[in-house]
Amino acid sequence: MSKRNVITLKRKIDLLKEIETKKLKQADVASRYNISQATVSSIVKNSEKLKEKFYGGEFSAQAKRERLPNEPKVDSALLSWFKKARANNMPVSGPVLKMKAKVFAKDIGLCDWTCSEGWVRRFTARHDITFRKISGERSSVDECATDCWVSDVLLPLLNEYDENDIFNMDETGLFWRMLPDRTLAFRAEKCHGGKLSKDRFTVAMCCNMTGTEKRPLLAIGKFRSPRCFKGIKNLPVTYEASPRAWMTMVIFEKWLRDFDRSMDNMNRKVLLVLDNCTVHVKVDGLRATNLLFLPPNATSKLQPLDTGIIKNLKFFYRYAI
Image 1 (cartoon, helix red, strand yellow):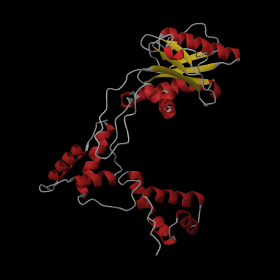
Image 2 (cartoon, rainbow, N blue to C red; image 1 turned 45 degrees about the vertical axis):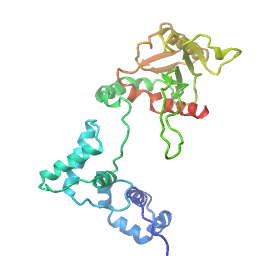
Image 3 (tube, rainbow, N blue to C red; image 1 turned 90 degrees about the horizontal axis):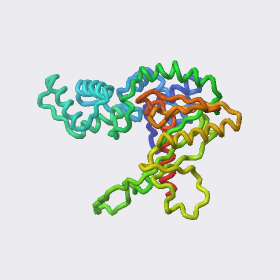
Image 4 (cartoon, rainbow, N blue to C red; image 1 turned 180 degrees about the horizontal axis):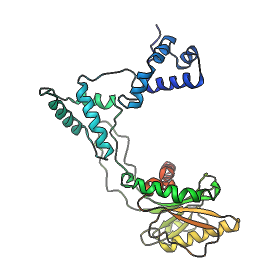
């Protein structure tokens, strides 16, 4: 007897899209998804209900079976409250969900109803809710202001340059001596960490919009001639020094003039996108480079290098060591 192949709600929606857009036969779709033609026919028959569940967000996209809550009114009220809480960027934990569920149950007259850990777990699974770490500052961005800046300032400028001539530059801190915060250990062993090293470099990176040009990394350390550089004639990066290993106006201007000189030698006119931190100063006399500064407090949304490129650089660095 063959094992029954149950597909998720998302796969059912994908199946319906293939039938509707590609005009495929049900038999061909059944073969591709490794299910019976009767199952495909049932999915097509209930297509409207499936789409309502999927796009309405009432059920998890990975759900294979429809598991209805034992108290639908409590479930519906709690889901509505959760959506509003997250829309306002309010952190929500399991105990908070449990408390709110009890409040909603009492409001509809279920005074003796108890909200168990299992009910909360099934609620989160049913609605595709996961426990995640809060990171970044994106919620503080003025969406209206940034949208206006993109349409009124950024897009007109981008249209004036070829994609290969649009560059972005940004800096990040690299804690080069920090040990991993995870380890393999015996099950009964207690894992205790020590004080984390704060030794760091600042690394500045620059690349063009298409990713075909990556400028040499600029590394900024504390010392002009570190002991580890003894006997080293060539470095794979450009190295500068400042007392706190931070970017300074002097270092930035030097880097920018070198960048501009290299672009001018190739007879290119380029656009360089930067955030508006205080060390990123306007430099006079640039021949090939037009500077475009991002609006205040919008780096987390508009900075291209901050959307995964910096993270990948650090990932490969940690992997290499």
